[in-house]
Figure 1: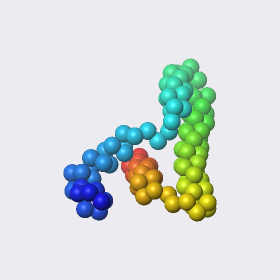
Figure 2: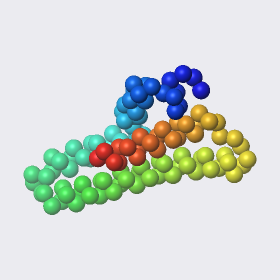
Figure 3: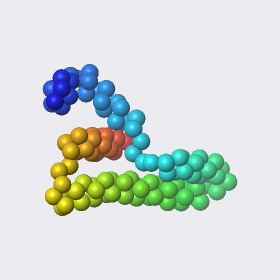
Figure 4: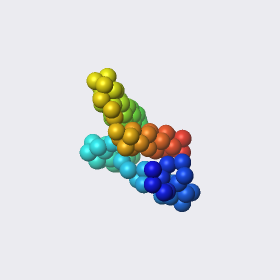
Length: 110
């Protein structure tokens, strides 16, 4: 472990890493479609508020499902390697833990 990484990381370095994690997208290319749909929902609110709220509920549920699927697929990939007796690189596990930490912190800060 190099200086500035892991448990011995300086507070400034830790904040820098957390800031990078917060900026990293949790979803892939589908997030652009989700944003476009959200913009349409907001613009349709004036004409049909009830329909807009229903569409917002549906969209949020879809985003949550996409997030769950993303994390599940990543977890399954790691577990498949373990079940085949393969070693998962520490770097892969570190990145996975960072993604979970970022997601967890975003959920709590919402």
